Length: 481
Image (cartoon, rainbow, N blue to C red; front, side, top):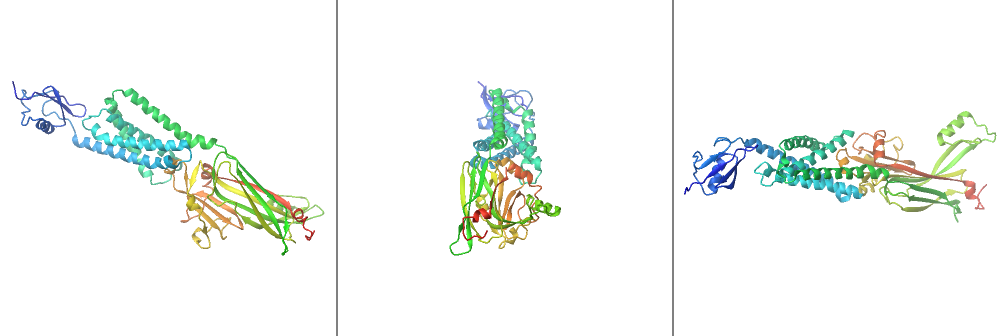
C-alpha cells in the first residue's frame, strides 16, 4: 500500500479557485500553489511533491495554472463590503425617525422597511468575504445581490427626489456616490449570476419583487394618498355679547365670544393666531352722491361701498391670540374664548368689527420643533429676530422661529433645512413664512415659499363679526345717542 496521498486538484472555476480532494474525500480549495501546500501540511502530508503524478493529479491545468487575481479580488471585496455598510447605515439613519415617531401607521411601516433593509445590507456586508472567498454558504451571493438592489432602489429614489429642487444637502454627498456604487455592484453581481448557490433561485427572485412592491406601495400610500385624501375642515365663529357699563369709569365693557372647532380628521399645528377688534368711522352724505374719487378710495381701503357713506376708516381697539404658536388642535377639538374689551361711552365709532384668524399646518404633512417654536424672541431685546418685511418692518414683534420637517424623512434628506417663522404684534396683522430663511442674512422670499406652504398644507381661516355701536349701547341709559 502506498503511504503517499492520492491528491486531486480540480480545474480552476470562473474565479480561479481549485477544489482539492485527498483520498477521494473533499479536503478544501486553494487559490494558489502556496495555499495548496499549506492545505496539505494541515492535513498531515508535508513535503508532498506536487510534480509527482503518482502523488498529485492535476485536472484542467498543471501546477502553474492559478488564474486567481488576488489583488483585484480583494479590492472588489473591500469596495463591495464598504458600499453595503455605508448604504445600510444611510437607510437606518433615514428610516429610524419615521419608524419611531411618524404620525401615521403607514409612515411608520415605511420607516421600518428602510431600517430592515439596512439590516439586510449589513448581513450582506458580513457575507461578502464568503462570496468572494470559498463560498461555503450557498446563499451569500444572493444576499449580497439583494443588498445591492436595495441600495440601488433607495438611492435612485433619493436622487429623483433631489432632482425636484436640486438643493445642496449633506446627504447628497452620501447617496450620489452610493447610487454610482450600487449600479456597479448590481451589474457585477448579475453578470456573475451570484444567485446560483441558492437551492431555489426562482423563489428568491419572487420574494425580492414582492418585497420591493410592498415597500413601494407603503411609501406611496404614506406620502401621497393618505395626506391628500384626509379631509380638513374648520369651524370659526365670533360674536359680540351684551355690553355693560363700568360702575365707576365712563367706559363700557363689551364681551366677545370666539369659538374654534377642528371638524376634520387631521390634527394641525397652530402657526399663528390673532383676533383684533376695530372701530369704524365714516363720513356720511345725506345727498347720497359722494365724489367718485372718495368712493374709489373707500372701496380700495375697505372693500366696502355704500351710497351714503364714504371715507371709511378703521382703528384697532383690542388684539390678542386665541392659541399660542406651536399648539396642537386635535381632530374634533373645540375651544371657546370669551374676551372682554373696553370702549368709552362717548365712543366716536359707528360700528365695531372683529377679525379672528388662525394659520395652521397639517400634522400629516410635517413636523414642527414645537419646544423651540413656543418660545418667542422679543424683537426689542433680540434685534436679530426683528421683522424685515414690509408688513411689519420697524414694529416691535414677538418672533416665533423653529425647524420644520416633512413627515417623510426621505424628502427631508433631499431638501435644504426649512424653517417656520411667525411675527405677531398687537398693532399689525400676523406675518408668517415657511422657507430656508433663518435670520442669518437676507429676507424672506414669499414667492419662493408658496410651494412649501402647499406641500405642508398651510392655510389660514378667518371669521368676522360686526355690530353697530348704537345696538351695543342701547341698554345703557347714560349712553349718548
